[in-house]
Length: 289
Image 1: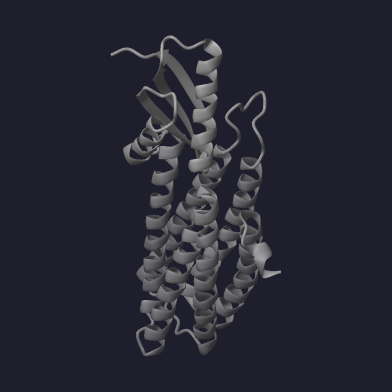
Image 2: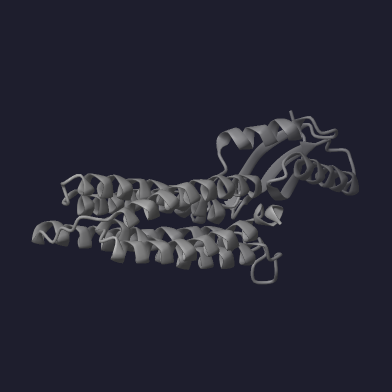
């Protein structure tokens, strides 16, 4: 049963269920435990539920095969889902920050009870476990949306840790630290949102997989029988993988069919050696010194 959670869809479903339960726990503990920081954390969980649903949909769409309108597949749906997660985090951060500032300015301080402390501790433990599982799944499947979700879980653990600190200090006689913790939580959320946005917008702008990766493919193609020279290799990120174009030079005296066979050999070899490469387009040119 546990193995079913070690897939993009499975880990997202688990995250959704956990976030619903944690939202209920934190909203109850925040109200009856009189903690502004925990109520801010509860709102974060509520929007996490929305983000989980969007990631789930994004992963399912990204798995669809290429069609007439999307010849390169639907991989970027994964990145769009990650961008949405970042937007949700931004909205959450701005709202929580404004609420905390309002409490600090007006001096509406309340000393939290032990119920808020227990809820914060439970959240930290659960979220760290969820982060480890989701991060491993995201890296295994190279899914931007799942990795964004994992970072969100990690951010949630840090947020709850900040809430716990504010609650504890407030209980020691400094109630202003509860809303201050809420403000710090807002800043942590905004920082994480900016990071996710920057990474995924670069991908949506058809970013190169990097010179190191392209050089590895170039060196690999050079070693394939029949290739005299590699003119260039260009790649682009699409969702969780890459599409690669390359120009190679072959013996000018061979037939078109033989040139085609070399191109097919290159495509097959690159796909087998680099599983993250979805497809390779090979331009065959005559070799010249």
